[in-house]
Length: 594
Image (cartoon, rainbow, N blue to C red; front, top):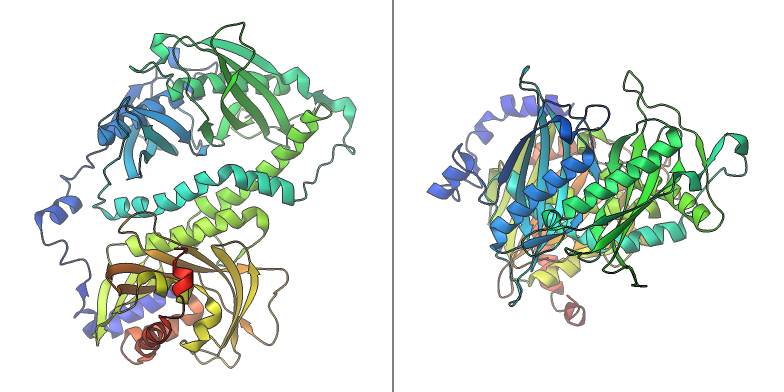
């Protein structure tokens, strides 16, 4: 249906579209913009590494050891970070990694890394890994990774220069990096809250104990002495080396459960709690926490000490790795059950079940493309963090697209459109004489939207999830020839600027709640991606932009306005401006918290 509407627009509205000018055309007039879009442009922080996989790099199956791959990934990413920082950098964390393809001996590993965004002293580095068969010239995507590095100088405090994104892809990654950083900072608390508040089901009592493997049989402990080849020029142990040692003991633990050669499929975030140096002894411990039908979770921790007589060991790192056992057809095999030890073993067993649910939520909501998931995703406390992330990052990526086209301009209110990925999106823009923080606060509370938007008949606050996220039930009059009014269940996520130049953001998307199911009285509507961005243009001057990725239920209404056959978009946006002007002095005490 969406494609048909797009074709109809191109045929029937050619005269309208032919007069459009790109919003970005002016900014691209210079040589910099031309170079950014041309073949000659290369990100100044980009580093590439290509390695031929030799037998010494492989495991018993003749495939590249994941530990070796992690060392190459960390080295490439570190070189990219140091190229931007101009000083030594250390690995702070590595986000979740999902391995899509194995790499065989004789193939080539191609790794590309570049800095997505720099903050005060830390930066996010994006990494892409592909494999190449030199004989057939075939290539495969292996994995993507995101690492955080911290710049470090001995004497002076580091203040990193900002990244200036130039291509559309760089702008998207730069924008979403702030949201990913927010998730990392609350990662530990999020896991703790989910484990405390979510009921974790297990079937320990119902399982046949005669066919269970005691978890203690999988326990592994190994010690490594950090030597100069394991460290950088400052004497700090390479993060990739520690990750490789962790993968080694985790593989041994997994093998003791399945009595076979397991394959590592995913790694949950590595977080380095402190440094280690040349001369440290690193104690690596691993144990199978839980075995599911076709996969198992292995927990690994790393502790450091200097001398054997030391009683206190420093906790360096922890991670959770997911393994499977593949048959001759590369299909996962059934695994034996695990019998945890009473006490800590049972706690780890239940926490592994919770982490599996969290991983599934995260992979489903965060990793999938918008066209591959339902418009309305079920909301519950266990997936709230990832729904909020997806809500804001989807809007930021829509904003960062380069191919917005100016459709019309009436009294300095501009309407842009974008036909992309089978969606028709529109964007309204104006400048108002209101402070950006005031506009942000006034429009954050959807309960006030009926005061200026006739499409919002009533708004009920269903749940104030936290300071930045709330769920609303909205009713709307009938649109597009339908007789029934509509209702929506909307998650509203708001974000303050991360750095100078960043906008205030209010992102909106549909969710489903068991307490607010569809009723005969209303036709349930959905919004995939919509919301506001506010840029401070000067003292008491703000650029207000509204974005909406149209869903099938409102396409006819949207295209009518885009074609100039209706002025409701313009009228509504001007009413929003008047609302902001009339209420700009109501929030002075609240502004002190922004």
